[in-house]
Length: 249
Image (tube, rainbow, N blue to C red):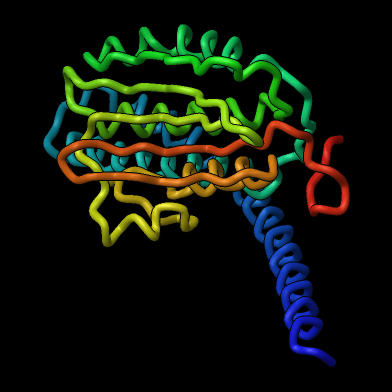
């Protein structure tokens, strides 16, 4: 058996094992979600009984129950994001006017960033035209990047979304004027469950990478501490064909 055939076989085995593990973990998360929802509901009911605490003991109880409730909500968020990551449907690539879709998306999210005193601007590239994408998947990835950019950008800063046409791809960029990501952390930002945010789930950027790869593209990162960060999603302008591991459906 040649070295290349052996490596392909080992890669296929690892992929199958990871797929089975992913299915198992998704089932586990689904089973945990229901009792966790019940715990959250009952905590809310108990907290209503302590809505107007009268004694120091009642105040301490209210505070502790509130802490538990916040942790339950955090676990629910992690579970929902994990289930979305593990059970994402197969992409359906359909030609869309990418600039038009992005312009509508920016207009929708612009007021939210304005409330945080962060400007959100869109710079559509010339000649982008129709690009084969699963808009539901790609939209989720772009929203994730915009949300991260907003959280990283101080008041008075900017978040820029732009597109650039290349010979065989369209580059979709989300750039912020935030604090930047230290060089030693940059190789880890796409790892599942790695997050620099206190309440982060660590699944946002892995989801962005998965979306880019399921389109046959890539996602890249450039960041300078104190200057800002730019994420670039490269989207092929031709449909991915069957036999490449992905495909139009």
